Image 1 (tube, rainbow, N blue to C red):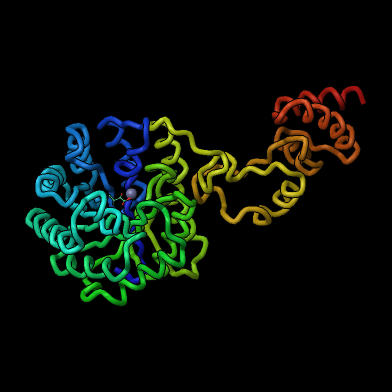
Image 2 (image 1 turned 120 degrees about the vertical axis):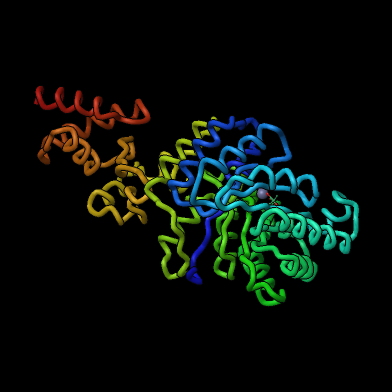
Amino acid sequence: MADNRIYIFDTTLRDGEQVPGCKLNTEQKVEIARELERLGVDVIEAGFPISSPGDFRSVVEIAKAVNEPVVCGLSRAVAKDIEVAADAVKNAKRPRIHTGIGTSESHIKFKLQTTPEKIIEKAVMAVKHAKRFVEDVEFYAEDAGRTDNEFLARVIEAVVAAGATVLNIPDTTGYCLPEEYGAKIRYLRENVKGIHKAILSTHCHNDLGLATANSIAGAQNGARQIECTINGIGERAGNTSLEEVVMIMKQHQHLNLVNQINTPLLNPISRLVSERMGMPVQPNKAIVGANAFAHSSGIHQDGVIKKRETYEIIDPLEVGVDHSKIVLTARSGRAAIAYRAKNIGHNLTKEELDVVYSGFLEIADRQKEVSDDDLSKLINSKLSSA
Ligand code: KIV
Ligand code: ZN
């Protein structure tokens, strides 16, 4: 595989589904998994099999339903978890177990109440146990973002020697700055013996709104898998948003990071996940928000009508949106009105436009948005009385 290929690991159905109030049934999860396969993701994290019989069933069904992507089940570094995860993914064409343990001081001291040496032992035990069932074993060092780099490197070196194929370095609490997170990945790449045998992975949370920036910084410093979710859903402020990292790689080709996502499916899958999970997408969300390609101020509308690229860095068709929207509001100018009038069959002269414009402002001041229907009625009434 080319050295610049970034594997997209989708965890919408595991970390994403941990969002309070969002429960999907097995049928809905299989439906989303099939769409993720069409989208071209490399890995689907299908669930946390030991967490409930329902989650176990979903992982089993997803493993049977998809062909191309790796199907991954999460487990703690606990033998029983690993065995249940192995059982859930056993019918997958390409099964993976994702196991791991907390490595930061607060996880070791307070959550796990153990010692750093015992953490390394458990991590190695977990990877070796998982290797009895599957070849492909991903290890996560929970709270790696706040873990001391030297200790993290010791843990990672031990699990690589135990056979881990992918090394997940989660910024579990969304705390890191991009430079810091990028430097952490670089440090591991430069200081862990045998690191070239495995793939480094980013897994960033969005508590400070930095998940996307941190994931890209990780990839720029040698990570070759990015873990992310559709619409950025996930615990608390969410996970890295799949659509954002994919489009950053596409828009900034000088980064020389490539993926195989079929980008025109980004908006359709965003709507599917939003509907099935009952989680609306914020209108100003990058790439998939309702306003991502809408222009409402007169200055912007004028620019975009003359040349779309003036205010749009992405062709909406590339991400599955039919066209940019020129929204008519009290901030719109004559160019926008002429454009929308033309779309509904009225080629207004300059004089006609002046007449329509004054009436338009009265309506626009009264209501938030002027529809095609309002505009058509206005044009007909103004021009017939002129
Ligand atoms: O955020 C995190 O640390 C996780 C791990 C379980 C991979 O989701
Ligand atoms: Zn997470």
